[in-house]
Amino acid sequence: MRTRILVVEDEPAIAESVAYALSRDGFEVAMASTAAAARAEMAQATLVVLDLMLPDDSGFNLIAAWRKASLSTPIIVLSSRDDEADRVAALESGADDYVTKPFSPREVVARVRAVLRRVAVTKTESPGAGTTSKLRVEPSTRRAFLEAHELELTRVEFDVLACLLEAPGRVFTRAELIQRVWGDGFALTDRTVDSHVKALRRKVAETGADPGLIETVRGVGFRVAEGVEA
Ligand code: CA
Image 1 (cartoon, rainbow, N blue to C red):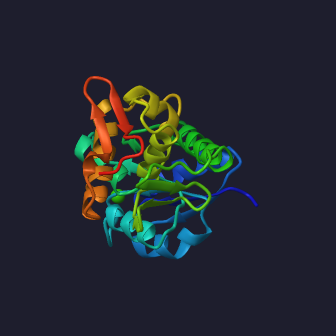
Image 2: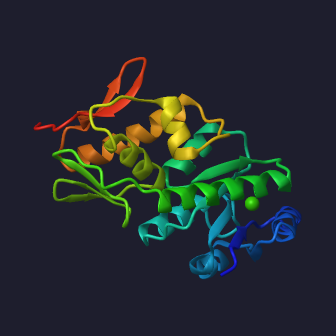
């Protein structure tokens, strides 16, 4: 099966230049200029390049709907402003990466390749199911549990938790988490990592458990406590 990239963008010049660069690189490309068209095409896509500002809906609503439907298709957001809040919100809602406009089509192709590589690596090199007495992940199904409660995690939150659970008790630095979850060449700030951990803690707390199960080690990084009996 060819790798099919869905480009969701309502500005024809941008959509066409991205589609052209992707197809020249060997990808099969589908295009959608509205959220409605994107919804119809989503299930056939290997990866989605998504503009946040569409004529009939916000890209944020599309991400939320897809993640709610458990579609794990990777999403790269095209962010129109150099707005950190937008980018963090996109990552928190389940996007895998973002490119800020104006960008070169080659940059989008490079990001697409990087995200596809990262997804392939997490699929084939999944560690054994990590666990503490309370938190548990199932890499094969990408489901996470806190005791009997299933946690509804974004892809990034899942990968962060799976990484921490590989070695309960061990501290992972932010740089290490960036390397493990996003891969090389991702110029992410520590704040981005912190915002994903914060979201993860909030989801843990929503089940009634102690969000401190995921500990901050001041000045170093994060860890899950070993054999917590909280
Ligand atoms: Ca737009």
